[in-house]
Image (cartoon, rainbow, N blue to C red; front, side):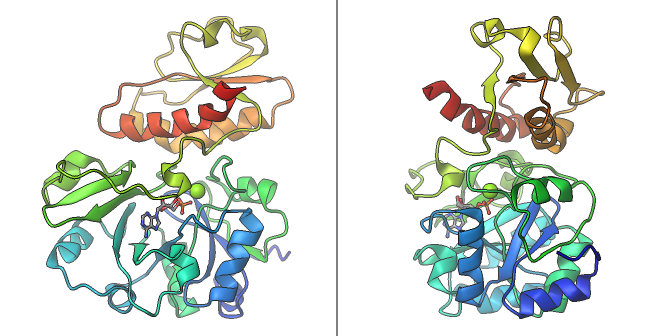
Amino acid sequence: MNNLNDINIAAQCIKDGKLVAFPTDTVYGLGANALNPLAVAKIFELKERPSFDPLIIHISNIQQLEILILTTDERIYKLAEKFWPGPLTMVLPKSRIVPDIVTSGLSTVGIRMPDNDIALELICKSECPIAAPSANKFGRISPTTAAHVKKQLPNIDYILDGGKTKVGIESTIIKLTEFGFQILRNGIITKEELEKIIPFDGNLKIEKISAPGMLKSHYSPNKMFFIANNATLKLGKSRAGLISFSGELEKGFRKVIKISERKDLKDYAVNMFEAMHTFEDDNEIEIIIAEPVYENGIGKAIMDRLRKAEFTWLQK
Ligand code: AMP
Ligand code: MG
């Protein structure tokens, strides 16, 4: 791998059907030309991602959206105007140009415009939309730095290093219904913010899709990981690292990472995957405990990630 942090080389890799890891506003993505099925197949191979899990396509301008979707629903443009570039993915009816491998055979495609200059320039110079899931092995912790990417995917063709990502958790995913929007995955853009633009549709059940964004287990460290509660706090604090928010649980832990000095939930989102990586890499830590937060606003997205990270460990 080449150490040069050169967007022109990265864009050439994308054009050549290779894979590039790049920073977005949320986490690092593992990108390929979204219109080249063979290139997209390499993403699934390198990540060891099951083929039933659809990818999100990243665009750098609104004209690219028009070739990827069938509808001209004006609500899409209202949402795009307010939230793009930004951490909002819209699931929309796809056009024939989008290969089935990107959408796992679904008739819809997830699209967003990331709010990161390196990402936007890469997409622009590659002259194609870029399909990109998070740049980690399937089911593992998402990367928020280039070092996290290298740790899990050392054989990638090229990595663009843009420092630590500013949002830290994956995008909010919505789908539009006749009546409004439904949330398929919580993120930093909350239901309340979206409701200011279009109504929330609470009437219909969310269709069951077979995708890990919606599975119970995901984002999981390779060490025991639990959300703090009466039982898990008894597991052996002297061997455990605490991801601390309120500062009230810290006594007795081997190590503590304070996730937010100012007790702001945004900082929890920004720093949580990095804290998991840090404890995962720390030989003195055997158990990772994370402090839970109230499920209001961004708290929903944070608890969603913590529960999925914990799920496999609760089964053992
Ligand atoms: P990732 O890129 O790994 O953060 O996750 C992409 C997630 O987006 C998937 O796991 C799905 O949950 C969701 N997604 C992508 N495309 C679609 C689609 N067409 N319909 C529903 N959900 C989708
Ligand atoms: Mg992911």
